[in-house]
Image (tube, rainbow, N blue to C red):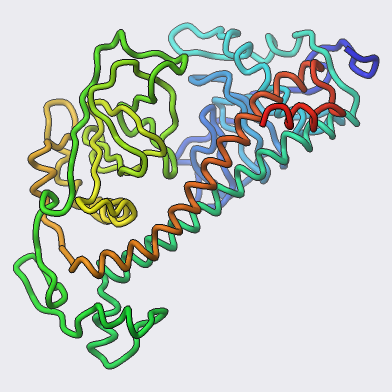
Length: 404
């Protein structure tokens, strides 16, 4: 440890304070985040603490750490930094992230996990001078900022593709426009010719001429998940990623937590994943080949149209609601029930054109996700090394080059 790092205690560098209790009934509509031990849990119209803020899980879930960039309300289930004592707030956040497992081990609860600030303040630590704090926060913050930017970009890109799907296959905007003698918005004359000019009534609703009502089974291949023996699971990364249900799902792709060495049912890259138990109908996409348990199903278009499959399932969400009450203890859907769901079936040329438009969007989303995974891996490797002083700021570029 260099001379610019000093031995001190957490309490000498930051002052932690127990959060302020506020019930859902007491909260009023607003944009102020209420931060509990699990992160932002709700919103209120009044802030208790100024940004930037660092919040630790105190009760229920301990060892969690959150960096808050807007004024906020720290919930009673949290500890928040009331005073940074002149230290860099974002560095403080990364410092607590680096000792999150140690914080979790300080559980003083009986029935429920709990963290006492009086047990945190006396902990002896090595602490860098302010210039190093700024540098560490800037390096790790740049990685997190890029990951967050990718997340926002992906949300926007997905909304774009969803809007096209809804316009074409739910609202039938091109058909309505042509029936009124108008050129469909944002569409070439050649593409517009793929759509009819008339809507007609079916027992299940109004659909374009030349389109028909069918079942999921006619258009998609469905595989229901099956859980392998428990002894084949591990968290060490042996085998392939195993997903059991919607608790693994993220914004677009699931997060690997458990792996399986003897999978029995698979999803391939680009397949749509659907939760079939508690709740039914949540959607994600397989980023890599993976194993699926009994809480999931995988589905793909019979002609391989991965984007059309994904957005079709997104807009089937309301159809899954009827299965929420089935099952013994919680909602579920059987393979037969899934395959027999009624859907609108457009002509192949319309589906092909949608795939041509949406697939590049989805590729951008996938590329952003893969880049974020790489950045997160670098950040997670840098965090303990920088916060312990094992890796000095001046050597970071060299370390990253060697890691890539």
